[in-house]
Amino acid sequence: MKPRLATLLALISAAIYLGCSAIPGHQFIGSPREIDSGKAFQGIDNRLAATQQSRIWFEDHTREIVGDALTMIKRNERDGASLDQQWYAFRRFGENLEQILRAREVRFYGGREADVRLALAGEYGSMIPFEADQDPGEIRLFTAHRDRDGFDLVIIGQNGREVALKTVIRLVYLFKFSDEEIKQKFVGGLDTFLPKVKVFLSSFPPRQEFISFFHQHRIADPDAVLIGFQGDTRSYLKEAGIGDPERYSTDSLRINWYPNANGKKTLLVSINGNRIYASRAGDLIEAIFEAFRAPPQTIVFFGSAGAIEVASGTITTVGSAAAPPADAEGRSRRRIASARDGPEGSCPR
Image (cartoon, rainbow, N blue to C red; front, side, top):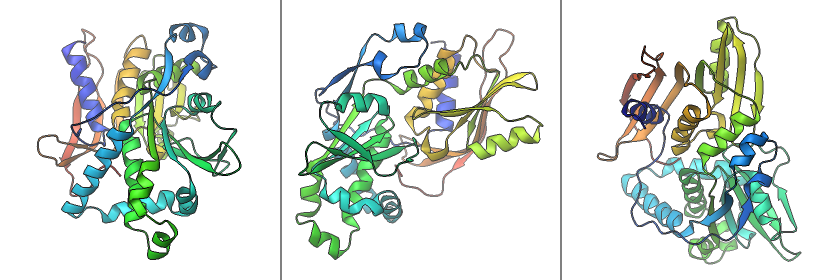
């Protein structure tokens, strides 16, 4: 990759990155199942499908993710940054606490729902969503039945280490902040619950998810890419007198596509519901440069975001970012509009 393009990718990723530095000691365990990627993602055009001959599997990352989650929780408690985690944990899982406690296993699968369902088709007789209209954003909850005697809780989330990590952290915090009534119902507490938690991540990378999405919906060669909260980006274009877009949404991406916005093809990528979270942001930028014949002249990020500085451990937030048009030699230049140190925060949320 050319040095300037590599710098561009790194800077844009930093602008929309909200993740944590890696913790050493990761261990990978063999994959439990394989599925055919061509069947898992029907609807892609034949040309793209023909290139996806490799097989998708879900690899067991339980030891790595759970170990890192416990390490981060200890650090949060030492630094006094755990109270906000109580709010996040109960906001996401509080209403379903009884089902979480009664599940035989709690399984997190990071990947596209179609792939997960194919992988589990021979294992469960049914998978019932907790809510009929669950938004295909960060995570979705299902009760998965092998028989009449019990069920597993299946959590389908985005394929990304950070999404799996913060999901496990929130499950652990359910016990750390639970009241005496809950503790009495679940004898053994966290030490009994934690061995039931399993984490599997798809071998189909987010970058390829995004490329497949662009091809499926015939998104081609945008002149400008706007990344941010949907309401903010839409209002920005409305103020410019641009009409309603074509809208496409899957569990990989939610976008608004303007084939002709005052003579320019414009792509709006929504980050609502943590759609583009942490390292997936970098994968999105790589997909944009790989999927299109020519890179967009402008890439703009609306909003605020943060990244962990590995050396110092501080959180840096970025107000906005834009990639100016390519110069005469076709090389893109990059500029961060504004940056400042974040006043607070624990990671991940």
